[in-house]
Image (cartoon, rainbow, N blue to C red):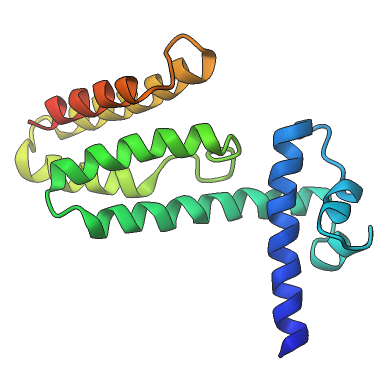
Length: 172
């Protein structure tokens, strides 16, 4: 059991080091040797867990997406008010995207938690305009993230508060 635990721990360390490596050197500069060295492991260690660099990158993306899913589930459990829950999910999603540039680059590039919450909310409150309102909220979130990422909007509490208020306005 100890070997299994240490193998799982090394695999997670490799994934985390891989994220750091990509953040520092970009995806094209990813070096599995540097990743292994950052973990204090041999240069063969990544290949014991992943067939090749492509599978390693896919595992990193999956790892990042699972981290978002855990955070989103925690937000859903924390906020009883549906409008507040959706607004908080939207703000958290932008923070997460900015902190994790690989998020959204995988096979599932849309956020199912937010879209499920939006669909449930709008189908009940505004069934005739649900699709348009879902589009508007998604556009607010994607647009805000893109504007912050490009430097056209400041990544600040004020910007995120403005987003929160615009999302809440769209929900009412």
